[in-house]
Image (cartoon, rainbow, N blue to C red):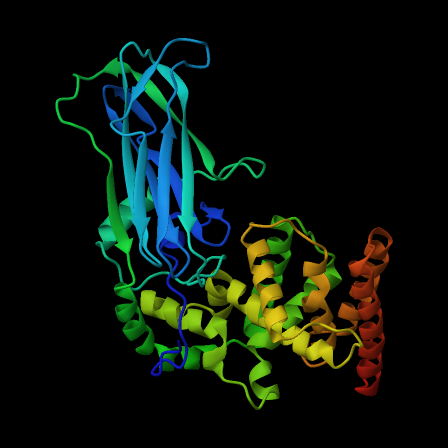
Length: 429
């Protein structure tokens, strides 16, 4: 439901991302977690906490079970004893809830000093089908919390673990060291604890804070021009695609960056139905300013690269489909299908699905060809996009087949049209 005052319904804040950054594990699109322990080196009889932050991504309750598998032997076969008051903790999370679970463990005799004792953390969950209340990629940080900022800072200091890409995200391996010193046996009873960091009740405060920043966000959005954001976007495109398994040719980077720049800068002047409040990147900008007003003093390119890249990518995918649809004789799907595809690109950006060559071209690089002659400035040479994509085309077309071949046929036609537009505009090589 759209908030009448805001004119949009914001996503819930990415509390987990504000704590653990990119060191988080995704379970489909319904649950995210960060897993770590503290301290990493402990004495005999000194408790260690296994810490799990859980973030419900949907608008439904979720049943979660966290289990521990503790070692009984070290790597050299020596007997060890690691105890915990409860190996499995079950809890029910409310819609959109974010919380931190602490499960204490302690090494006791006959354990000897040893490094890298393994602890397996198993995450299991069950939920009804629900609507996403957070994007799969990084989202806006929170401006309202159920706990003090000090508690959040303590959690930021934890070393969170990201499982290897080929490992199961539902079974996460941690290690800790037992130092050569013994403390007296514990007298107090250890027990697990769970604390809510953010709940739906905070959304009312979030919206009020967002509303107070909308006018400032509109002024700031006007500074996102091709001269202020292009370079930052170029580096983000190049680095992000490479990190997600799709290293780009220079022409591909240029084309995608032009499409993203058009989304931020030119779209508002080219589309009479344009409303900045409808843009996901603007909504995130409002949330970011509510979280930290000092961001308004940053350079535009820095704001876009740190906070707005993923929502700009989402809007650029939808806009690029609209731009190329009238130029190619191919069924590109209806609005719902294009939104589904945009969400798939977001899941790839979040590292949840495997890379696919089509995420380069359909529709972003193709859209970049369409807007190439419009997104220019004094030092820009639009022919570099055309020539660069021709070169990339020759390198990639030998390796593609099936649906991807149809995309390259579209690219070939759009490049011909792009060359004609540059000639008609008398833009020289």
